[in-house]
Amino acid sequence: DTEVTQTPKHLVMGMTNKKSLKCEQHMGHRAMYWYKQKAKKPPELMFVYSYEKLSINESVPSRFSPECPNSSLLNLHLHALQPEDSALYLCASSHPSGRGVTDTQYFGPGTRLTVL
Amino acid sequence: EDQVTQSPEALRLQEGESSSLNCSYTVSGLRGLFWYRQDPGKGPEFLFTLYSAGEEKEKERLKATLTKKESFLHITAPKPEDSATYLCAVQGNTGNQFYFGTGTSLTVIP
Image (cartoon, rainbow over all chains, first blue to last red; front, side, top):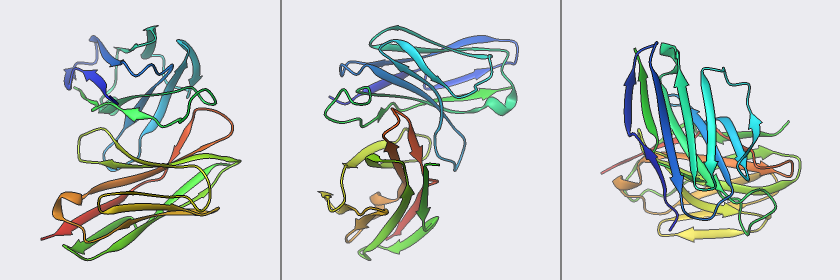
């Protein structure tokens, strides 16, 4: 099973709201990722967790706050977002680099976020 | 600096008309090259991982090949359901990070 699940599928929020995106995988992967994707652009890396520790933060604004409560779950907490943050948010997972047979990243279906 | 370039940006094919998509890369020590298919509004769907020059992988109408500088995704006798954006990504020896190309948008006309 190579499934990564994400909830919700769609989210509309105002600029003063606080919301969270959730991601779950049961493949035993110990690396998990958040990407942001704008229309007709490739995914843009935001955060990487390796063994539940934040290993890469691509200079993402503090209104995005990631959390990895255990090896299967990844959250992205959103607060005071701007309209330009509207995008498809993708979660992915893989074996950590050098630790698995393959480093292939498996993606979830994404959360379509609209900020009004 | 690690870099990935995909061409063409867009490709329109008649059903049954075979063609190839290109992914050129520069990376400090290739760890893996990955092909994904992405439908509008959905997450990328994994197709292939290639690790070393000369490697080839096939799945239905798709075949991926790898040289030291580029990869090709060959589509044989495509069908309308093959219409999607095809993304290429590379991973270097420095860690987990993927570098994505900008994708090729494929449209197959019945």
